[in-house]
Length: 185
Image (cartoon, rainbow, N blue to C red):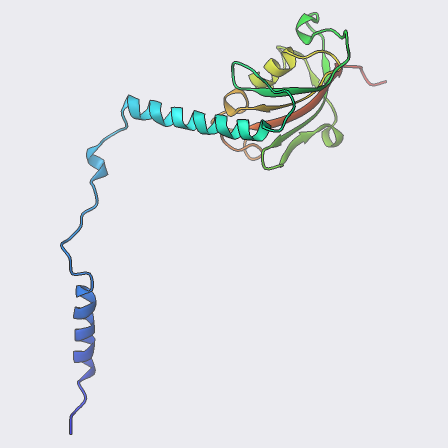
């Protein structure tokens, strides 16, 4: 009669077989540390690719808009309504305060601020602390205009965002109507 193999022998054989399961010459991963820091060309290419991806995202989001206007800085906007003959914001006297009935949100629909919840924004062109993209967008409008726009991160809150409400590199969706500020009674 055959005796069963001792448990220690069975475990040793299993460990040896498991170690040989991938019996191939050792494969070494590339040594990334030999590259060092990225070159200027690497960084330029990385940023070019990021800019193209962001541009494609904004184009996709505005593809179904009626008549999209693209600024030289990448802002896409569409005038939804206007009052014929109303003055251009750029022609207003210095110190004029505008009232913005607005909704600012992220592309995922997260609302940053909304006039129905937070009240309208008082906006003085050139003096308000909103990012430059908002000044550019409003500076091209007329009193009474209703518009929607997408502002790329470079013209909104950029690389840092505005934590916790606005993440890094966020595209900002803007819906607004521009009027002259009227002091509450």
